[in-house]
Length: 577
Image 1: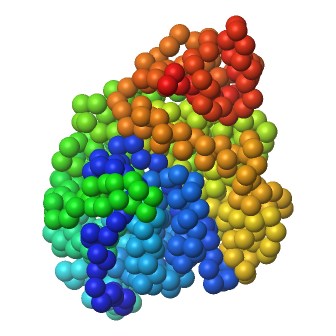
Image 2 (image 1 turned 30 degrees about the vertical axis):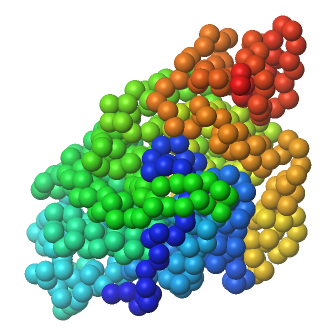
């Protein structure tokens, strides 16, 4: 199927990533790269794999352990690459398989691991299977690999059931058969260009296990699984019996999400990953002298579930390794709410022996520097800029709090620069497919996908030589890597210092619990061994005891014999070591 191939797979014994043991992922800091918006190597306005490769030293110096790449597969780009036409090929806008191979190898030389996105819930309508299914007409064996159904009504003019697309409108599209007549309907929980696979068909499982091996042979260190809660649908595809179904997402188990059958899929996938861990040879010291064991390939689930406890089902010992903590991402900057979600998360993960994960931003939600600039309770899609200074102050404090919690942390590209969402993009430049559907998701995800600035000046602030696929706002250059590097107190230097301290502090990173300390209302204080974290989520300064030597603070603090005065919306790290 693939039009791209390599002469030989990557060397499995090549020195790779930055962890020192097979369970590196339990305390890793993983950086999400959205390739089209990270770095453009050829001046076409679109980021690419060669651009990512050129910026790998920046990520090493930032101090992250792994890089997660959003989809770069061959795709018509109806949903920014989450509509995959060929899972074994790189889309030409991003390069080719040789570029992917070079990126993986160089990342390993820099002690960085590479995690790639995998999209198993649906393909592109330009996938060879789906094109053949349409061309062969009703009764085609290829239609059994998707969800084709006859419609309801006198002439089949109504959808097979009442399910709604996440992007708005019905979750079904009727096809025109080869003879020109209106025909069957196919299921797409997202855009019509993204038909859902039928995971009850054995060929689908066989194909994806083969895809896993293809990328593992190339040397990737893991997979982030898109819509991991999807795949399996309730038997018979029953009506939901409700309208405005999007309002139910995250609150109820839906007949198309979080079905028990998904867990058997992941148990099968885990055996594939474990084969690779068993056959790898001994590793040597990295380029920076950090020894490691080989192995440690991982799965990360994007699983939107009603509760953290249901999310924990995805990370049982024989399934996946991590699952994104969307409950934490959606929590307001409020001490009581934050403590509750931290406690629930840690309690849910302990029985399955999985690490907690913490994340504040990604490519699908408003950046947290903008979310926290607005009043609480507005959710994760916000269209107003809010108070920029307040948002940045809270974002910096929230980052230090997140990085102090036990488990693994995820960073989204540009958050280390304190980037806000671009909320005023003109309608004519928007490219989020949900924006054009007129319903469903808000459709304003473009605001967090604007290419990041590297330099103060230039046609795209160092992103590339030919502009950028989404316009960057005026003043973007003053938030750039160049403008912040070496500047005391800058957000970039705060991130670098925090990641260095996290690596140096033996009690940070992996862990299963915290010791909560007495604190004023609106303040979180906890201890982890010799380390203490205090986060003031209130709008006024508070005085707390001094817990030793100050390691790092997100704002200016005043220490005296009476204790430490922590300003509003500020987090402080202490150590007694």
